[in-house]
Length: 217
Ligand code: GS8
Image 1 (spheres, rainbow, N blue to C red):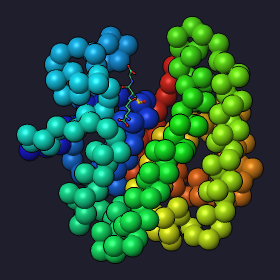
Image 2: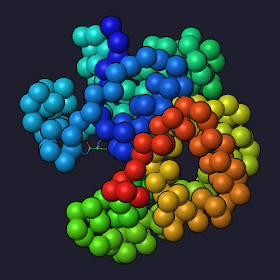
Image 3: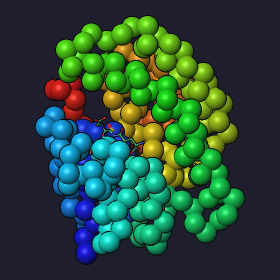
Image 4: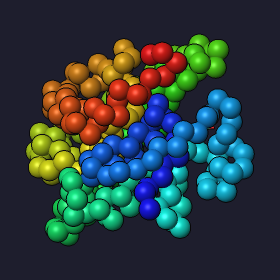
């Protein structure tokens, strides 16, 4: 049975899963969820994710939510197909991939998501971006990226000299950040900039990025 992904192409968390599916060259069905109509807060969607958030993946009788967990499942189940995203043949490399997946989730995402939210979502809700929130998170993200700059001077990618789910997980939010004046956070750090140019030029991401538009931006 084909994989079914419920989500919206402009959503960062949906995009994270979409990129992992494309890295694996998998056939899947994308079932659009209309966030503007609040479809994700009502049945039948809330029976798939009781938190009322996209994305959700259905694989036969298995229903998953949380984009990082879904992408890890895809990478594990299809480890022999397409790009090896989890270094499943090397325990130490696999552990480092998990470390940097956690770093994205616990350090990078909390700093970058409010910046993207203020630039893209607030205007769609008729609010002007809150510069105080942007400034505080630019500072926070800058500190995280200083650590990335140092790490990327020692290895080509975050977990080592191989592309992995850890790098992939950074793509969606960074793609939106690069459309804002805060792109300088990436561009001012040569190793981070080179890493970004590399990972964002992968065909699997290009397939997804084309549909990532937020209110026309
Ligand atoms: C977050 C899901 C989420 O916030 C994950 O899947 O990684 N940790 C979860 N989804 C957003 C869209 S992501 O751009 C969502 O569903 N927003 C709708 C809402 O908040 O009502």
